[in-house]
Every structure is written in C-alpha cells, then in structure tokens.
Image 1 (cartoon, helix red, strand yellow):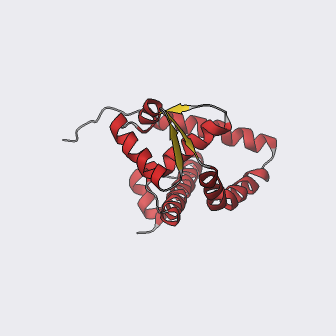
Image 2: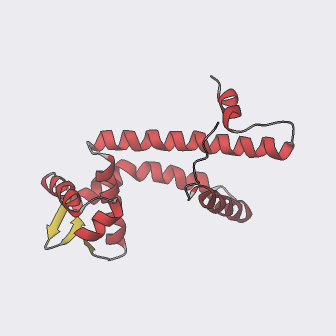
Length: 163
C-alpha cells in the first residue's frame, strides 16, 4: 500500500489546503521516525547491544558530561525496571568493558565513550548539518512545532470502545 493511501487511514484529507499541508507534515514525521528507528536498530546491531544497553550508555554519558554521579536506583528508575534488573544489565555491561561500578555509582569507561562517539559521531554531524541550514525563524518554528507535537502525544487518552 502506498504511503499516500495508508495515511488516509489515519488522516482523512479532503480538499482543505491546511489539512493537506498538515497531513504532509505528519507523513514526513512518520518517515523520519521510521528512519530513526532503523538507525537505532543498526546501531544496536553494530555494537551488539540491546535497546536498554544503549539507553543506559546514553544516560550515563549525559550524566558524565554534566559531571553528575548516577546511582543504581536512579538508573533503575530511568529504565522503569527493578533495581535487580538494572543490576543485571549493568553487570553485563561491566563484563563487556562498557561500565565501571564503584559502590552504588555507575559510570561509563573511556573506551565505551569512544565507541559511542565512533559509532554515532558521523550521523550526529549529518543531523547538525541538516538543522544548520535553517534560518533563525525556521528553527524557532520547528522547535515550537515539535513542542506542540510532544504535548499532543505525551498522554494516554481513554480508550473508547467501538460498537
């Protein structure tokens, strides 16, 4: 089924120019999300890691950049898993040389940081280049739009049963 036909399932278009433009924007976002999901899958495969492994690395690298310590309970809460599940994941990443655990504090290794940068660095540069070509007004519009989209999707609506 073509993208245009499949989008009609979600978004009835009609002839209204604003509605057509809105549908085109949402289709572009859907294509971007699919591309980003594929990139994350390729990254996990190339690093031989699962999704939670990469989430842990990203969270710890961000904390390291902010010079902030991360304890096991915080990591478990971030992943929405039990502390014992977080400990098992961290133990696996420690055995693979990606993490160091000192007491209850968890941090990445220098090698782990280098591996993530080598794997994702070029992609991040391409993304920065794509965003860099925007005017200040375009940039503000995109940021505002994405904020509105986050507000639109950042809740779970009650399920209405269809009779």
